[in-house]
Length: 143
Length: 228
Image 1 (cartoon, rainbow over the protein chains, first blue to last red):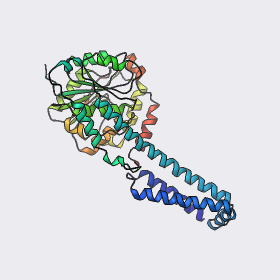
Image 2 (cartoon, each protein chain N blue to C red):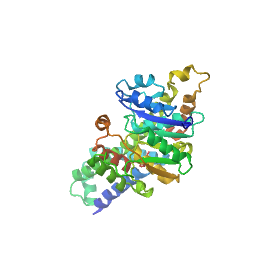
Image 3 (cartoon, rainbow over the protein chains, first blue to last red):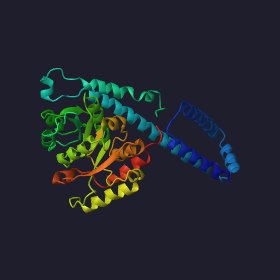
Image 4 (tube, each protein chain N blue to C red):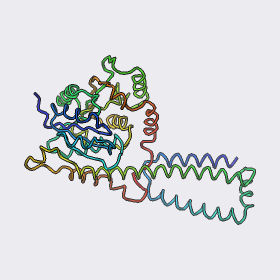
């Protein structure tokens, strides 16, 4: 049945999306195109409910409602993966930020503070850290 | 007495107020340079560290032990003249003597990285269940097998400057130990294991990570390199 091929293909695409190490501007664009198509399809499904049934028969599903359910599952899985990736990229940036602050405010032990010319290594380390992940600045397209 | 001016001890600290002063003071009898990374402790750990002779770096929020280690490593790397760093657990389960032995190996140039292992010699101190779980983790980890390591989750490690600057711990939680092993396996650095003794005190037993946390570690690792 056609629907089986479609659903399996969706799962494969999701998996590739999940294990790909880089999310480029292209991925972002495809996500947005997909979202717009999804919007139009939902409009159509609301205005002309029979279309879903027609499409369901085309791909070998009994009822339009069943087809909608399948699509919902696929959409939800996509949403979950996307959110997971977004959260992790956020967490990494958050860690870099907290680390930079921590290093900047390092407290030297009393005897070092009173000793002559204590190095100020914290700033150097913070700069090191801050300059490293430059790629994380661009939207959701972190490493 | 050997000169340890070029050695930095990195101690990640999270809610260890009860013991951290003793651990730091005891370690400082041998090693002059210590940096404690307080990982947003809710107890008085930070205040206690401030009274010792250790450098104190405080995470503004709790990030996890892996993140604390990476912060400590970044701090140590920025210190002038630093050539080796030693990661050390805050609960007093590591012996300073073991760290010295491992440093001697690292300084001889035999290895870039020296890892402490609980299993190289028969060690009756380890609780049986813990021993089984730790062994299983090693067996399941392909990178640990590649390096022929016997213990992938020991907090006592010695890294030279080169190894430390290559390391980028991204697993903030407890999976960093396996992440470090993975890095070592792919880096081509010379890695040696040295037998160490772990002092399983009442305190460290009560603090030690629960075995069920191993499930979390396995999950974290399995999705480590995925996506962003």
